[in-house]
Length: 236
Image (cartoon, rainbow, N blue to C red):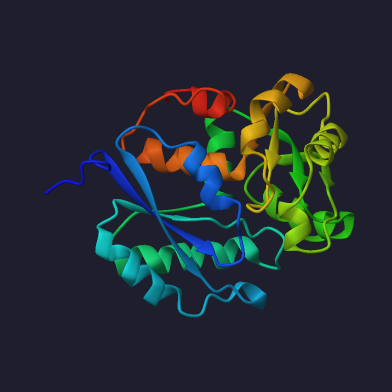
């Protein structure tokens, strides 16, 4: 018997235990007939995810239609490769499509036709230059500017103020950028995207918004979600 509240789709969402931003941001984007069922897992240095398979198995008992990994991994060495391998492994074990914050963001940029991009992160300049920029460019984009909030820890990332977020987007903005990409799933940006697009004059791909956009579109849900920027307002 179909779930009355999730009669269109049920998404199983896997989030690092300490991340307090992904769950409420995805909740902001919910559409009628689609529900998010969330489970938390441990994430250790080197992007190790001990026990995630067991957490996923418990999440599968509510019969989700897809799994969403609330992760962007460009700040770790070989982060995109590690994330792709994890997603592939979980897809094989579950038999479900698996979407991730990082790869959903790149799919969104491609759908928007963006090639030259500015990037916003919660990281410092050294990490942005050494790890984030080359990994983003490995996906076929030209990073023409990058700026971060240089948050010292996760608490500071999640606690970024509106003013700090507006400042880092202004710093990253570049006249030649086709779009602005925001990475770091713990940086709370989704509810500010529409305003930031107005301020910067650029389409913004926020990683958590992109994750939900891809999950919806790839599972046949084409609803336009208004108030969160250009990406989610499109029905393609």
